[in-house]
Image 1: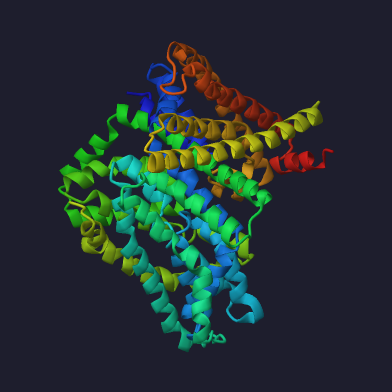
Image 2: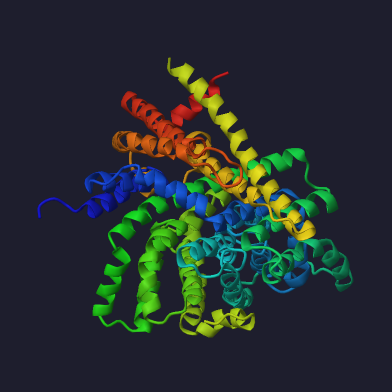
Length: 433
Length: 171
């Protein structure tokens, strides 16, 4: 056969157009159209797949709503209160501000679902706090802000986990619960490393917040700290669907920012709607493109083919997970996370199922891998963003990121090979896997 | 001629930002109404779900077609950021020609699918589906026009940065 198959043509065109700078979502629509043309199918199928996919995935509406909730949190003074609370909590130790950076990522994670949003919002604030008066080098501050931002999408609510729920049919509620312990574990190893470094590198001590101030600071941050409890309450009491829980989170954020703290006006609300809409549109187009291309993948029966190839190699569960670790870490360095979940994971899921890997566990491993890819040099999206946000050369960030990647890799291995870390909480709430 | 297009495109882009912000607001409001009606009054509202989904479809397609700026879009910039101005121009031409061709070829099929759907109506709001889905035709047409413009820009040797600067200068 001299001509390339329609599928190869389609895949190559998507890769080529994306590399040449066409937005990935548009490239996937274009590549799918090319497939339909080359295979002699009805070209209108691309629009049909996208429209039906978008109108049929109620779950996806959680994405714009979680983004909106985070925007309301950012617009109000909620973030400042949370940072003050974290500072009162862990700021008293050597390397205090560095610990606060990790702690606020954990606390703020329950308000937002996107690592990039975390690094751009709260992360920027921490960066300037840490480098003020030369307390920490700018490279260390930027590196820490980038690595601590990866915690957000692993802890609930998480946009990558919502997207994963879409492709895997796993329950969003259980996926969110499954992310809790792995997310906290990453926070713990990062804090552990900071404490270990603090003496050797002589990190500065901060003026510690007197203990009698604690009740006041906690009270000020309390309504914001209640957010995860409200979210989980809505989800697990069955009051709302996951998508509705996202709307409740946004409404609650608006309510405390506007009603209680009086720190958000009509202009802020419009601005939050606009910035959230922009982010949602760019993610939504990626999903729309993936819906068209996933039709191609299904028609070509690619997941089955991959599954058959892997089955022939007699791969064990551990071997497969190791392969997944490697594939996702490499892809995570060059691909945007949502694209990987939408396009690559459906191809791997049947094999994971055949090997008896729990779909919830697999989702958490995948998201962790993808998040780590965001901070893996040389091409980690978060690293690049920090060079822009903090105006630090990439070289300085990369040097400081390395030790963190080391401990995070250990955490990833623990989560991958000890399923209980992931599945303990879901099982506690009745997950049968 | 060029500056007229830039001015019109800028106006459309700004109004489209209003549109997507409003659509997100509608989606958010519909959800709140839905939760309140079901939880407090025990009244399920199917129309609110439908409204949210329509708002989502329109927001994504309208937004991609008309509201998003270059910097908002998700793309790889490894190669484009490494390339010099000449190479970048060639890349822009290739991308624009391919996009205009592929989206152009898909237009008749898309139009046929959307108009074919006139026989059906949405379940709750009773809107004809060809009206609801017409945003997809808008998306394809706008994408073709956008990349024709970018092709024109690249052929004339103006980089995309200059285009935005020009748009900012326009009174």
